[in-house]
Length: 345
Image (tube, rainbow, N blue to C red; front, side):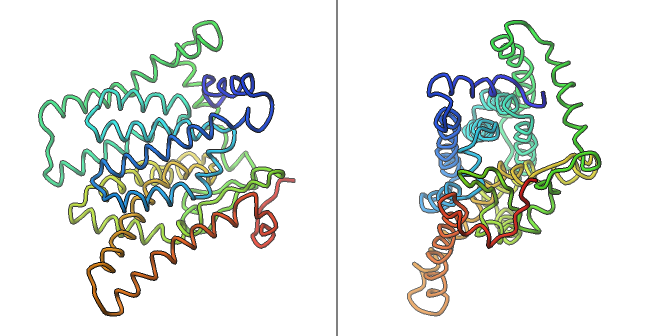
């Protein structure tokens, strides 16, 4: 098996509680998706973003198509993301050991949860470069975090396997088997109509087909996708000026997305658009900061064209985001023929 068993076992519990029906398959996915939205808002506030910027960022995340789909299907990504966001929040709140535990749980849900570690390590390094040095006890706690993440992963995995299999499983052998199976799925020997390279996710709009009825398709909402590169550049600009939210957003983007590019080049590992799912929050931070700054311009300028541009741009963009979400939703299935989708044979 390529994924760990415990969170897959949760699907069986869902069905036992609610029956073999849409609710039974999706209940906990929806619950964890809701938790993701709450945690994301708390992260924004912990980054000293204003209530308005935090609300705008959370609004965009909640109505992003890919986030909506992944939080309403029986896949493991939403569980992994919930613990990853918990890891980020606990790290920002100074609870480094518990943050490491949350990173371990994120990785137990799906191996890509380990990407929380490079994001946090990069953020710590950027703070050091900016001269925001941690106190000695914080350095010790951060070192504990970096070690406790893998340790909690290796300690909790046998416990969860014991619950599921009723016997102990060697965690090292388990991980090696999963990595071996995962690395065997390459573009050279595997075909899938929705497979795509990591750089394609930001250069071309990717639409992945999920199911016929309800008609599910997954894509980064075009209102977010179209501004990925400008928003990353904007966060870089704000980060160079010392904005803490932009520094963390950039670290999040690099740790959960950019690492896929060398991985894809070196291993030729097959990848899909939903691998971008953990990165959308980083972009929403940049969007929220930018939209909030435009509203600040509107409030500070009593007259002039710039004031009217700011006043029209923000509600216009938010309306566009809602429309894109509605069009890509199962309710608007009749719109789907407008888009090019690679349907499975």
